[in-house]
Length: 74
Image (cartoon, rainbow, N blue to C red):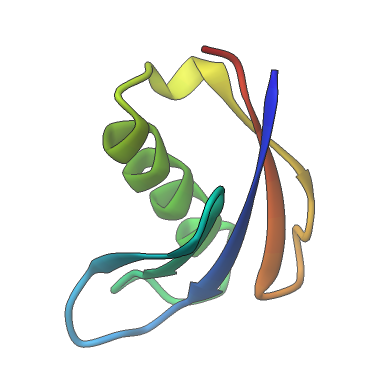
């Protein structure tokens, strides 16, 4: 298990993933921050970037915050 910090930016014009530090990412998504849409897309992009299935990425904290912590099971 590895913890990864994410700063999420919903409702962006284009999706992007920027690695700011080791295990810290800034992820911009097109989905709005409502009905959990942005969180789902952030999780999908993080899994894709790390090369693991989406089921191996779990949000630990930050469900309603732009600062999130994910647990990734490699």
